[in-house]
Image 1 (cartoon, rainbow, N blue to C red):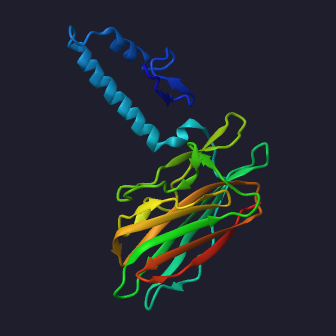
Image 2: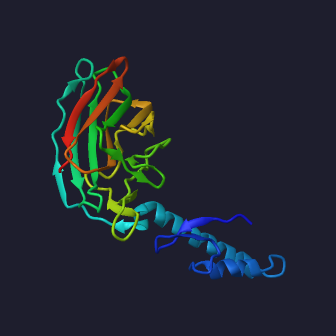
Length: 262
């Protein structure tokens, strides 16, 4: 029988059926029942299935539950980008930037949450078909790792219609009590896209940047694409944010930057 694993409420991986897990008794009950001779087996299967589904939903909504809670010690807004023309009569701008930092760990590293929005409006007679955004990193700054992937948000999705932002995220980060930190993710906005239901992908993976690409199967006259990244650094470096919306044959890059508090 294949072994399935999940993270229990105490934050450690446990095999289904392991005697230490709260659902172990239910698993043993299923194994001990005969489906042909006991209708009770079907009822148990349904109940356990519902419990497992509920656990999966709760863990997906609170991924930060698997690490030690770490709070931000400071939070500050950073400057919007200049407004750039997008065709004749359209415009684009990076707005709503916020930088947050945690206290140092024993290695003098901190978690920095950088979040911002691209606000774009197409020129009359055109519509936005795609947008790209990048967080470009200098030496000494790394994108954190969350659940085995880069700690960039949003994650790749085929449709962002129902993509509500999770309240917390778990990131690999050494603390006194654990090797993972649970930090707040939701702050400045609650959905990653306001205006259209595009797909979102990570067009390139590199150590010195985090990238997103939104594609609109149904082009829109205006949109606001929100994004966030959890960075690991010791502070003092400057991070660049750059976005490029496209409307028809027109495109424009907007840029701003933020210094990580030291």
